[in-house]
Image 1 (spheres, rainbow, N blue to C red):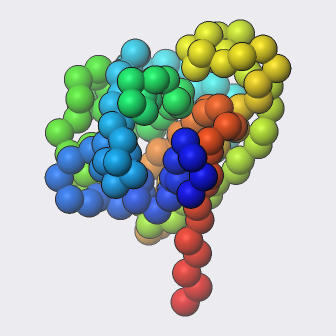
Image 2: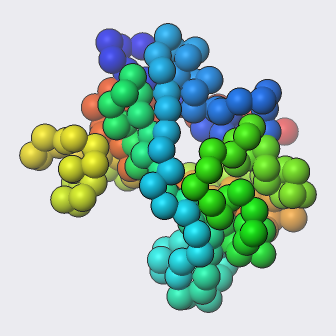
Length: 178
């Protein structure tokens, strides 16, 4: 791992694990401190791309959780997570309080376990608000990772859109066949 580089393995964010926060655990494993702040949560009209991912009618309602992730006190990722209202309405997913054991654990307790994920990663220039929130320099690109999590029946249970500075990022994918 290069200096200042953080390796993120998506698999640890898909299944319920030991009690605690997956982001905090991932950062701690690298000898760092990971924290997060929920900046907004509640029901919203789904952005078109999210509606398409979740198989909803465009403009349909979803539960959204917007967070800023911090690594050693510095903003390192903007994470917007979306859930179908039939799964998340009236649960901790719709609020700004920290979810004990994490969202994946709560989803499992609600009977929604992700067994497959589809991810797309693109490099792009950030919007002005993304640049400010992530303390980016002019001309500094970001990576945008979009993840769709599906249950055993192939139903979408969660969509995430994560924006992070490209510097210091290393995404790791482990693929098992069979």
